Image: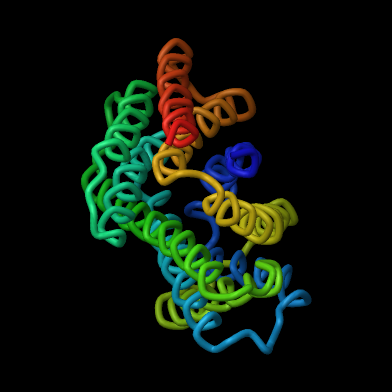
Length: 285
């Protein structure tokens, strides 16, 4: 739980950094490629090249979906929507997590869906106002990112837990590099096929890419996926929406964007209640 909270605080800055310094100024495919390559370099020194092929290929596939494909959708969304709108449309991620988890587990849990729905309501309270003309297109692009992110989280959690049940696995830090290698393959193909020569023009933009790649992606995704294996599916679903009040608060305090503080507080409180209920339910069971 603590890891998810720490990463939420870390990622709260990412939305605004992308929206302010990169969107429309740097080719989105180049931004994705740079970010995942830097994240790969962070974990390459720790990578165990003797990882069992099944483990390596599975982690590469998860990384290709959760990070590679997700970023392709995610960065495109900033060309269609404002930062608050992108944040708003991520509210459906908890529902996808709860439903995908139950689908993989071949069961249906009303409790997981209730916790996820509570978090969605809390996020919707925060900001639901007049949206731009690219609303529908942007909405579906963000949903593509949400589905990829949700699928990757659930798949990683399930795979790591099944690995522990079968045998004593390698430490995650020695295998997580495969996750980023999978994402890098997807990002490289996308950049070669669709990228344009629109590169960072100043030190600030390069610095933002370096931070997003090495820290937000490299350290952030490792800690987030590790935290995902330590909490219940309902808590994981609800924590995905904790990014929304955190991201809006950063956007307000640093970049002086408009935000409705009473709604931010009310929605954030409801998300907190969803997480607390899920933790209580898990401990009770």
